[in-house]
Length: 242
Image 1 (tube, rainbow, N blue to C red):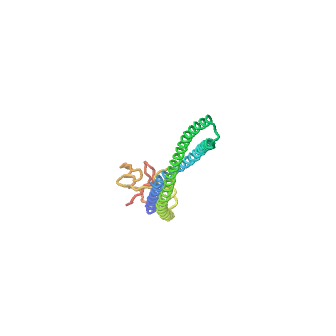
Image 2: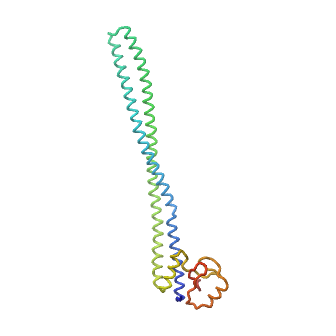
Image 3: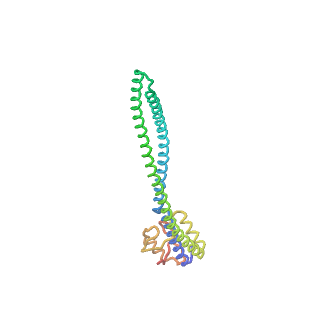
């Protein structure tokens, strides 16, 4: 295959642009902000799950509190009833003694139930405090996520701009090169190889393997418009590149 030497040099420029574009795309895919955003989002999910769990706990414990309050109320009603009977003066001595014993028992029971009630209220307060901590953390995580996303967008915008500029330059360069040479270059790249490379210090600058002396001698005898391929990686070897 033959191609104008200037076209061969330009296809090497296309290779350099393609390498730069690929490097920029890899950079975009590996931005530290991506990992930061993922970690922040995952933590936010955990925090929100903990918030739901805390709300469920509070709801369940409030039911316990209602039962405890009802128990206290029942004891208070019985105490009021017994104390009124004792105060009305119509109760016999034996019945009065029985009422006094019951009042003592109910008073003790009331203290126990109020202690339970207080313990339940303290549990609710503790979970409320934890819920508030989670709420604040969720807010901080949302703020962090927004800031990370902003930084990510700024970097990606810069990268996208560079890629667009290189792509436009690549298109203009490709359009000025003989079609057959471009087709060969694209075919090599499609197979996962380096499309074109310079001969540098007796080696292929694509696979970085040395070119044997016999092949180097043969290449030197070829016409300048003859397209040379690397025997190892099959890329287009460009002569005269600086």
